[in-house]
Image (cartoon, rainbow, N blue to C red; front, side, top):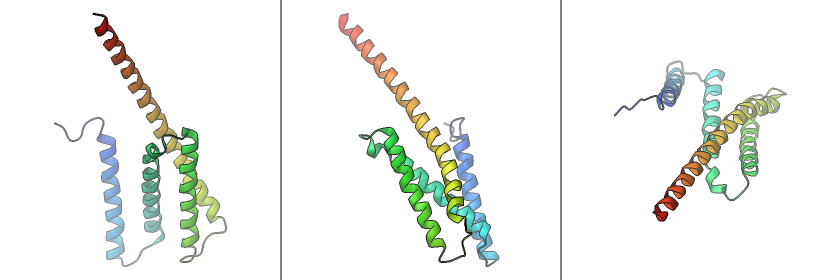
Length: 146
C-alpha cells in the first residue's frame, strides 16, 4: 500500500509545507529573538485557514437548513472573528486606517473561492452518491422481478 498516491500527493505537499513554514517561524523567533511582521502575518494566515476549514467542515451540523443560508451563516461567523481579531490586534500594534477593509478583502476573496470549491465538490459527491443509490435501487427491483 502506498502512503502517498495520486490523490494524497497535493495534500501531503501542503501539510509538509505548512509544517516547514511554522517550524521556520518558530526557529527564527527563538534564534533571532524577535517576532516580526512577516512571522506574525504567516501565523495569522495559518490561523484563518484553520478557522475557515473548521467552519466549512461543520456544514453537516446545519444540514436541515438551505445550503445558501448555511454558507452565509458560516461566512458571517468567520468575518466577525476576523474583524474581532483585527480589533484586538489594534491594542498591541498601530493599525493602518484601512486595516478593517484590508482584512475584509484579504479574507473574503480566498474564503469565497475555497467555499465555492468545497461546496461544488460536495455537490458532485452527492450527485454521484444519488446515482449510485438509484442504480442499486434499480438492480434491487430487477432482482425482485426474477
